[in-house]
Image 1 (cartoon, rainbow, N blue to C red):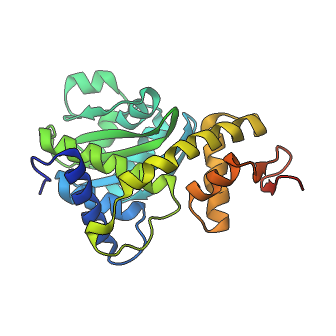
Image 2 (image 1 turned 90 degrees about the vertical axis):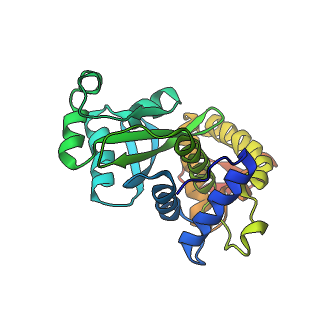
Length: 251
């Protein structure tokens, strides 16, 4: 199944409709993005990871043991499509992990991934402005490249995964045609970027670490990242360097 021949907006709308269908009435989360992309792109599994650096990774969700193992191998070995996608901010495709070329490129990861059950891995960075949040990694049990439409669909789902990561959870959805997450995110993204920069200065940390702090606070408060970002930008909320929690400005 593929969202064949769709324009960007129509493709995104159909992708979100499929994610919502996988969620079955629950708030949209990483696991449903992984389920939907696996079905649409024609891969055997997917994993979504968050990263704040080459030595810091958190596996958010993996559809199966092979996907989990592929993500784990890349982190432990420090090489692979996901590592490359995160480091350079671009798509990294490995259609044949058994090839001599791929073995030379990733001498430790390639044979280990094949042994784990993956013959092809495709990685897509989750990037928001200057901030790289992690990667969406897809695998196949057989070798072979993604078709043009499958690649376009995978990129669309990577954008959806980024949307989920920028928000604690997508609101419980009504009819699919009423859901416009990509359009709605455009206004909030600018505030998220600005707030992340402000927090980085306040805490004297990297942008990636600042975003982690922002998202963690949103999670503990039970609200979306965009809502906390809005408070930071309006200077109604400030992150203190001597504590893990944010404090109201003027306290």
